[in-house]
Image (cartoon, rainbow over all chains, first blue to last red; front, side, top):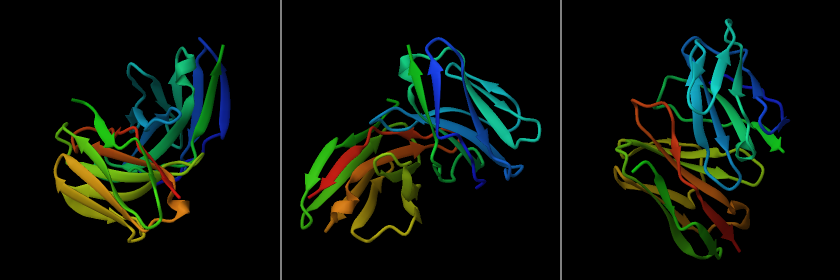
Length: 111
Length: 112
């Protein structure tokens, strides 16, 4: 699976949009971009995934660049409960292959 | 039921003890996983079960022994652990037709 690079940490004010970047310059054509988050002392939580089109669900939006070498997870109105470690993961296929976590970005949302 | 349930939530064991961690899901997921997470580190994959058969063992020491007795249950048997094995042990499950993993809240293990 392709390697990903994320900033170690980011800060965001409550109510503002949080934009979390991820570089995956070696991504292959059949690899998806997944985002998970892990709130302190809990198991990771699936947020969203995409192949090449932008995606949106009730939690977040995922913007993937046209060359697919980077992506941005957007939390449109961050709340204190969004404080967590966010993991960007690239993997083949939609299911069946194991999920391998990188270091992630620690997002701190403050009031 | 949309949860993965892990028991116990906390476990303290001596280095000569034998204990087991349990993971259960009733979502019809046919793939189940064990991860180990040390403090301030990302989860590390240990084992993958697919249709109740072990498909991936990430070179985990034999003192960790996984077992999948049926499609809903995954166990991790522990024997002769070391203090450095103290960590949060996470279980997850997934289904081929859906992209996301569902994780349990984990068992926090302390080896003394």
